[in-house]
Length: 84
Image (cartoon, rainbow, N blue to C red):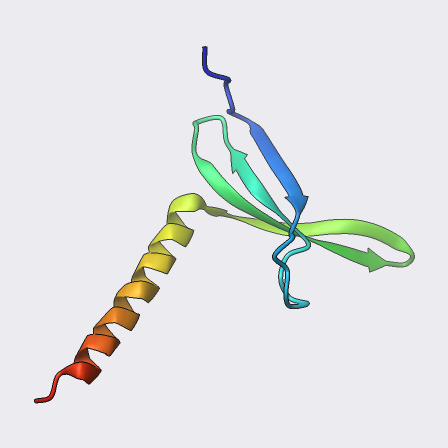
C-alpha cells in the first residue's frame, strides 16, 4: 500500500548552498490534489526574533526552465560550430 503524501512537506538544510542568496533550507511539498512543489526557505532575524521566509514553485516549472536553458545552450553551441 502506497503512503498518501498529500498535504505533506519535507524541508532540510541546503547542503549545496554556495552563495548568501541561496536558500538556507530546501524541500518539496505535495498539496491536497497531489500537485508537487519545490520549497525554499531562508532564516531571517528582526528585533531579536528568528523566523523563516520562503517561496514555492511547481516542480514542472523548474524542470521546464532547466530544459529551456539547455536547449538554448546547445543551439548556441551548434550555431557557432557551423562554418557557413
